[in-house]
Amino acid sequence: MELEGIVDLSAPGCGHGAPCIDPTFDPTQANYYWSATTYADYSPSAWYVSFSTGSVSYLLKLNGDYVRAVRSGL
Image 1 (cartoon, rainbow, N blue to C red):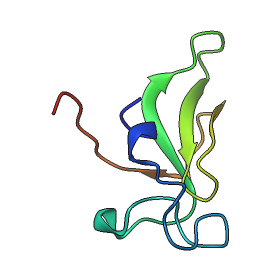
Image 2 (image 1 turned 60 degrees about the vertical axis):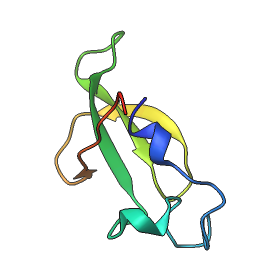
Image 3 (image 1 turned 90 degrees about the vertical axis):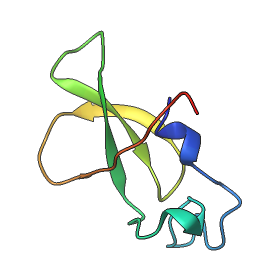
């Protein structure tokens, strides 16, 4: 939820090649970012956020995608 919370669909260029995130959080690639949360129904998968579209889903835990630190409770 914390990672999804920094998605900004109104960011300049969102959905057109620029990341869907406030520019304050630069540098951010318009790509998939892993969360630390395993998908409960299939443990080889984890939740991710796509900062190219703002979508949230799950994929197999594979190397090659991005991670970013987020903090909740503020």
